[in-house]
Image 1: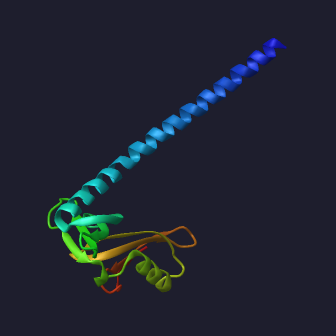
Image 2: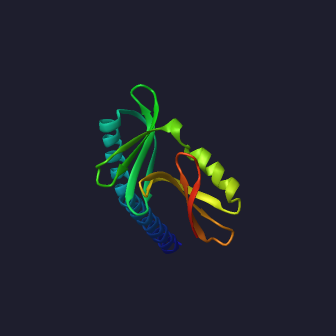
Image 3: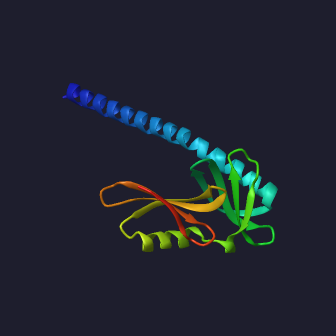
Length: 162
């Protein structure tokens, strides 16, 4: 009876050890995989504070097309809602008045109206051919991924890549 209980205790201890190892490994992988995103966000917010007097941050977007852009939205020191588009190089930062374009909610609504067959996965704000644009990523019923570009200023659909 004692040997049976001893074997059972060893099995339980072994299972707990394996589960702890999986949890710790998963946590380490998760933290390391998010480090580049967190670092980019921190640097973008710092640049937005420096060049656009960003006071509070609302959203951060990582945009990859022809070039990489980091975009921060929020309010400046006077309370005006702004959009700060930062090229990966950190040069030629563009500051836009948020009221001069569509916000994320509005562009997603426009996307769903224009393409109801697509389920939206994410939106990102950046630049394409020197024009501020929203990129909407989504999937159709079969799981095929599509990318749509909409003008930040007027919501016009610029490009569709399926």
